[in-house]
Length: 310
Ligand code: NCD
Image (cartoon, rainbow, N blue to C red; front, side, top):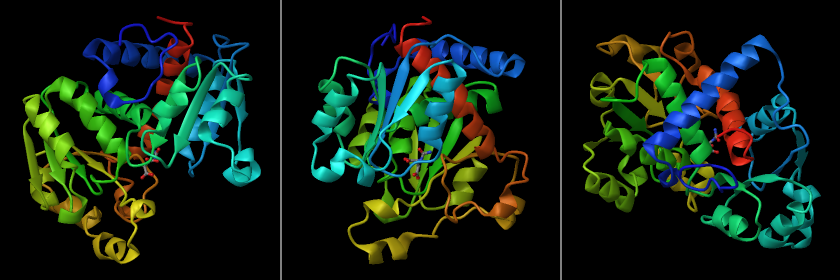
């Protein structure tokens, strides 16, 4: 991608290894600066608009915190029910309107491809915060930043991705970034929730080693890191199918005891019951550190997209 200035952030496949290096460097700069001071002025006078057509806690609030930590302002559409979307306004018209007020837009929407549609409707940068079961590139960037921090490197890693690999947009974006580093991947899911065939085939085409299994213990024992995900209830048209597969892959204290070695555990959150609370004190349980990293990574992204840092 090269220079991020003015660019849309839509898909995990748009980044090069050099982009990741730059992003990690900038995010760790902001992490250090925030330790010294609570806020900076880099984005003073700039406005971020958040348009969330689906629930969110971390993504929206960490974007808003990142913008405010950099001295910028934030406007938010609020809930769908309280906006003109409830009157039948299209996404394109909403985006056209909001781009009259803001310098950058973060959008989350249930429809696959909606972020691209939004980006095509406006000249200002659009950042995809999740388009249905499609992509969630900024989550993947903060996941990569966290892996780099927790494990000290991105090279020669073996990583297990566990849970709803069919509908999980965070894993769809993350595997694109991991493919830059030739990690070995275990895809652990019930048969019904397997990684879409075209994604797996594309990764194999890039020379990646991928093992698909339902045996989480075997995969975890072979891995440096386990990335758990929630079964995406909202994507099931048949809720009896959800009932059948939910709770099939769970990490708890017992599981950790049976592991052969210490591992790192990430989760994009929210969790339902796939990581039990008795796992939280485990030193490798890094998911709340991962949450914090989201602010530094989004600070870097916003400053780069708005052209205030290279
Ligand atoms: C994820 C999402 O919305 O895709 N949440 C997040 O942004 N951290 C994961 C999920 O909802 O399961």
